[in-house]
Image 1 (cartoon, rainbow over the protein chains, first blue to last red):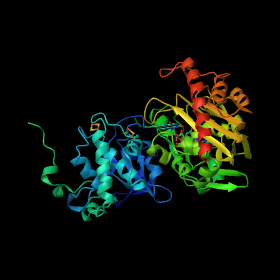
Image 2 (image 1 turned 90 degrees about the horizontal axis):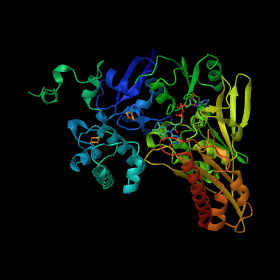
Image 3 (image 1 turned 60 degrees about the vertical axis):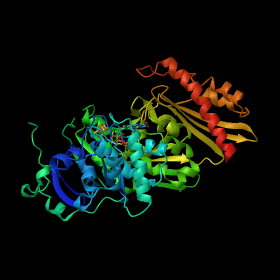
Image 4 (image 1 turned 180 degrees about the vertical axis):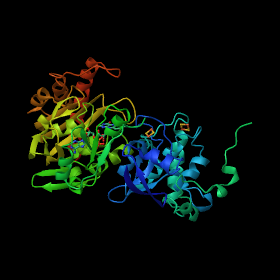
Length: 200
Length: 286
Ligand SMILES: Cc1cc2nc3c(=O)[nH]c(=O)nc-3n(C[C@H](O)[C@H](O)[C@H](O)COP(=O)(O)OP(=O)(O)OC[C@H]3O[C@@H](n4cnc5c(N)ncnc54)[C@H](O)[C@@H]3O)c2cc1C
Ligand code: FES
Ligand code: FES
């Protein structure tokens, strides 16, 4: 076991991990950050994309299935769960995915949105070609990509026209309490609509 | 899938890394963009991973007289954005831009790409074309290996057990024009064939050319027949096409699901012509 300390979505977590643990499994299984998904076994699909700070502190998109949790020691991670603000205000990229209907099954969406946030942090006014190339590490089996490109273009102009920040939202006060061993909110604070009910 | 159980160490100097690699079945971990997929599939199952991430000397690009020295742990993204690379070794930036995707380029390193010695990797051909050399540290001290001698066979670099690739020394090539031409069938795809071309012109004729091919054999290969045909030729399409016709000479491409050996030879000729014409065109613009 190796002791690691990560800051995930603004909250610090110290854990002992096996060196072979993939970052995505640590996020999902140890920290309860199940918004980040695994889509492939080949490092191709990008569904697991999160932002991780580099040695210079700058956050960049990485495939969390292709990073060991031990390699993330001391780094800042932002997952899809850390993008929206208090009161569930959506990040501009999340909102434009919603408005532009940039998802169908939604499986690729967490990674697609994080990759788009990463792209816009470097290129705030990408052409359609730059959007397509910027997202080439993310596969979508449903949408045919057209609406994804539109959504990223819209989000870029919303961010550029001001008033909206491309930065992930700061953690909510609840987030700190939520740093329980399995992550998530304490059971008595989980909103009713978030509890899955079996289909009758 | 989940990798097999493994120990982990994260040394802070090259000497400590070399010492840790004394352990039999230890393996260097750089960006992990080739190694972690192999660990996950259990195609590799070392007992110890020696992570070079904390050795800050291994990161970054500096100028040393008529050479650039690029640390082995410099990521693809850092190479792409580096002003010295763009000024003195644009071929490396051109090829690095075609490697994988943004996420992989944020983690994967130049040293890892070279030490991995994948015949389909884009950067081995570039260091061969640029006549770079590798600085290596091992139990017996440091030594330098010419790029032409570094790639021994499929996935086999000329590293002895316990050796770490420390940096890549690239001659500054001022007055050369360059281009990397890659053919692949899909986004983030590996090269079916790639061509790294560097050309120096003198009054409209080609004075010197260095051409190396990706994925035309178990290691990157110099297209020496093309290089000599180009020397002294004018930079016209006809002359370049005639020279590029020899691109597949002496190569031993493999055939696989994506391309037969004959098709790869055809691609080598076509892409060599394109690479040289693009390099020459770029010189016009400059
Ligand atoms: C989806 C995907 C697409 C890709 N597409 C391309 C592509 O189109 N073109 C391309 O060229 N590459 C491609 N790659 C590979 C990528 O370039 C990797 O970054 C590179 O092959 C390995 O670099 P790394 O730093 O991640 O090394 P690692 O994966 O950490 O290591 C690779 C190997 O090299 C050894 N090693 C690493 N560094 C050193 C060192 N300093 N000294 C001694 N040994 C060392 C390791 O022990 C290991 O055996 C792709 C990868 C992925 C996941
Ligand atoms: S799960 Fe597909 S790239 Fe990570
Ligand atoms: S919406 Fe289904 S994979 Fe993209």
